Length: 400
Ligand SMILES: *Cc1c(COP(=O)(O)O)cnc(C)c1O
Image (cartoon, rainbow, N blue to C red; front, side, top):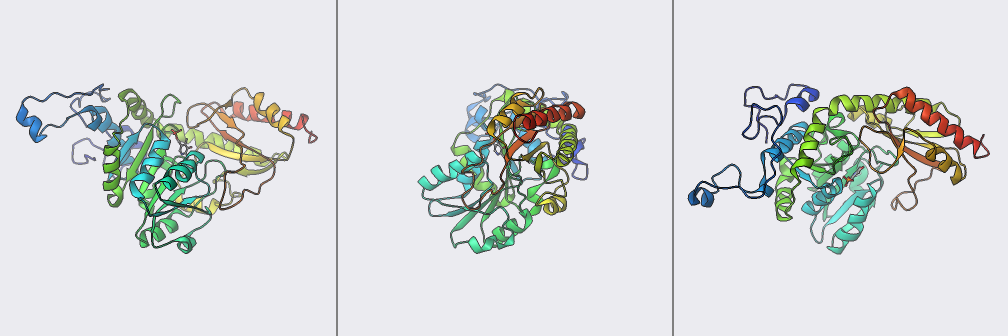
């Protein structure tokens, strides 16, 4: 997938920001154009029957690759340091295809209790229907995860930090234990992106992303990414092909375009989120800020050891107050939209329902948890919007 040998291609000693701009650009047939063509294709024609029978042509069929898909796959693969990358029609599909590719009937699969909700539901419903034993584990488990291993443990699934409660996991320790057992590790790395954490370098076998979030980056397409090392590449490649997965060229183009600015966008998301998180920590209405880059956060030491940055998504817990105060706070926000997803240029706020999100551990925090995504608006405007929101929260409860 990589073409380091071509003149002008990025090489591995260059910084990720440089590689984001240059990777995936020498693929295909239209090298002089800065961007690859958006190829709308099903059928590809062959010059003669012999070429067709031998499969001796670079392009064979739309589903099996186009200059657009090869450019995107190549860029993602290089960014992640993977043996191969694939794009899926949504982030959830990346999570589920990776799990399905590596677990078979009779296997035992360990999944972090902090996992993204729809991935949990897939495991509980579909994996169990296929005769795969699913067990959720405490995200705080490090090397001691081995206590949960059974002879048939085949996959350990991680997500760090969890996207609602921001628990950090000791990824290298869990990955090493998993490998020693002969099993595969998969991590959902959506929060960090490959710019802030490269799991394959820490011993993980497969990385999945909701490309919908920071990679696309503009809230205008759905996409997932799977990247695997050499050890896990084959079964994923086979299932991906067997399931007939592919993504439309316009969406792939949007992802490739998003990638080019990922570094500058993430720097600003990081800066704005830290400004807001540090300010929230000083507010008496705020009990706790759940942001791994704050020294007060549990898991901060792990974040500092393994991650090179933090993104725009975090949460905070407010002093207890009736739900009407949360409504007053969130309904009145001018810049933070109420909406699912995150990773776009716009700021968002949600009030997730934490009941039933855990089965192996418990979420003990009392008080209302608000999750925010810091967008690319000016930080002082975002701060003023949140400050006015906190005033409404106080004024409509007995905290005011
Ligand atoms: C959003 C999200 C997904 C799913 O991505 P979609 O593109 O919405 O299907 C998976 N994992 C995490 C951590 C997410 O935040």
